[in-house]
Length: 149
Image 1 (cartoon, helix red, strand yellow):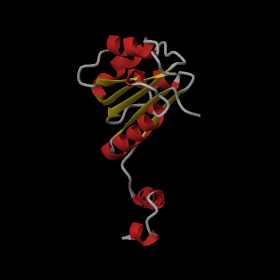
Image 2: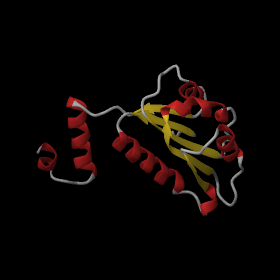
Image 3: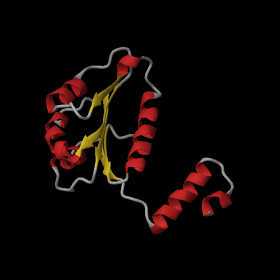
C-alpha cells in the first residue's frame, strides 16, 4: 500500500535522495498537470505554510503531492502540527537530513496517521551494503560480477 504521508530520515544522504526521488516519481506519475505537485523549500518552510499546502484541494488532478526535502533535524518537530489533518486527496513526503529519535514529535505525528510511514535510512555497512549492491546489480541488469568488485 502506498503511504499517504512518508517521513524519510537518517544519516545516509545518498539513500535519502534516492528513496525520495523514487517516491516522488511514482506519486507524480498519476498527475495530469503541474498544479498537483508542490515542493516547499526546507530552509524557509514553516508549520503554517506546510499545513496550507497539505490542506489545499487538488485542481485538475486526482490528488496532490506535497514534498519538503532536506529538513534540518532541529526544525523537524516544529512541523509536526501541520500533519494534524491530511486529506485523503493529499500525499506528503518529508525528508530530514539526520536521524530523528523515535520519541520525536514529527516521528510520532507521522506514525500516528492512518496511512503514515516512517523510514530511517542508516549508513550501509557489512551485509547490508553487500545486499544493497547485489540488489542494484539486479535492478540495472548488470552482470553479477559487477557487484562483487
